[in-house]
Length: 341
Ligand code: KG4
Ligand code: ZN
Image (cartoon, rainbow, N blue to C red; front, side):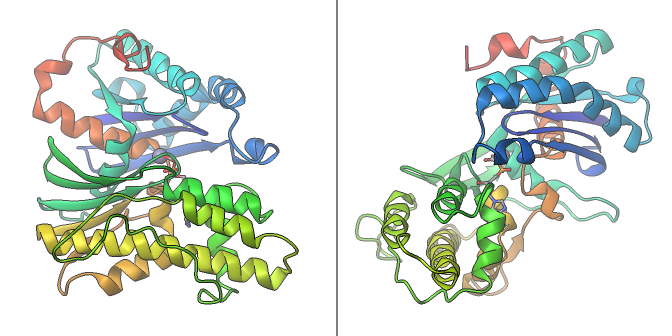
């Protein structure tokens, strides 16, 4: 079964063809990073206009790279939300029209579920699928959640951010340091030259965090951001490197400890990292070091599957469809159903 996945929730126009829900045949992404670098962040109107220009060429390219024909597509999955409304509308409109013309089922996908399903994808060689139950930390620019996944349709939210998502904090701190957009990759690069222990930046453990008796799996990064703001006056290049390294250390420590403590408490079969921030090497290393011995860890197989892409949307759509095909048989207007109305 071939699924076409479409993602336009923010600043990437992405499409992908995935075979039997897991094997990535193509993964085409038109990034708008250059466009948004001028403003240091995404301007929704500008992003939406770019999606309009890119959606058809990106889908054509994804079908071509997969070496399939447009008529071979059996199912279409599209990000329905959360995201920028004007950007989501381009993907959902396109996908609804595609499903109507091709008379195939369409599955609306939650963007965060999509990130979680990036850990089901593989490219060339077959990889055994994840085993439930799973603890997953999905963390990117727009969201920051800790989830106990008991099965494909049983997600239990055990923690989330009370203010900024970690990726958002990376982006804002990069802006404060004059490092550009997006913040995650540039901060981790600069941090390699810095001293992570020079500045003791705040870690928000929240409400007498005292494992193994008392847990609070929520997150907060706004205080950390304010602490960085105080350090940014009259700084040298060396200071910038040290601030970036100390900031990264503080974010990763809270994420890694809350994730691994959740693994100790819930005893899942696997621990997963997903979302844009899961590309961060320091975070991966800390999670490896702090995880219970023998715990199976997974990150998306390719760094491309950490940040926004169409393949993760295709795989999430496939598993939703398999669970209840009759629900998706008829052509649906996913725009009319969307929560953003
Ligand atoms: O998943 P994603 O592409 O979009 C959202 O759903 O938000 O994630 C983008 C976020 C940005 O905030 C970016 O700064 C962050 O992921 N990011 C990273 C790294 N690569 C991307 N954060 C930390 N380290 C990285 N290497
Ligand atoms: Zn995302």
